[in-house]
Image 1 (tube, helix red, strand yellow):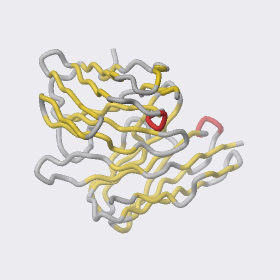
Image 2 (cartoon, each protein chain N blue to C red):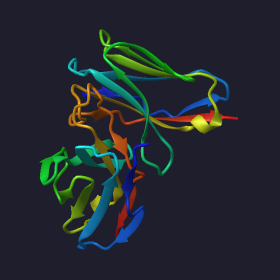
Image 3 (cartoon, rainbow over the protein chains, first blue to last red):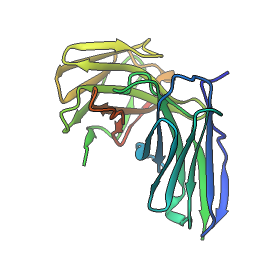
Length: 112
Length: 115
């Protein structure tokens, strides 16, 4: 079993839809949770960063962490064609990034 | 904004060649990383460095070496390129410990094809 599981998709939604992207994990030591967005042939860029459980909102993006269920989510409201990308979850037990584990990524298509 | 710059975006090399991938970051980060990214396999850590001249093996170090002579620069070396090293290579950096900050910042990637 992988430490981090992420459905690769693809996920196709119409413009304006609410998108839900999810990851599950098995290591209860993870405390830092990140979401990255990666456009085709580009490097991943950090979208959201959350420490421990709870919600964090940034514009149209909301990250949720449920440590009791070992489940994290990224919600995108009012999705736009420019949101079409691969979204990678990432998590780590400590600072510095040494032990960061990445999900394989979910490919999202937002249709105009 | 954090800037991680990979000098070569697209390279084509022959089997057996020695290949250098260069990376520079401008945020005074202590840690630097090299990953490769392949379809279906996600991001896999090759090597990381937590200080000048210090390096640690990641999950897939075989066939690779690294060099960190200056804090801002981290090089990945393929001693003798092979076709199974055709991939996208991502350089990244992060702070060591800044009150919980743990985010990794990536460069744009270097697409290497070995023929």
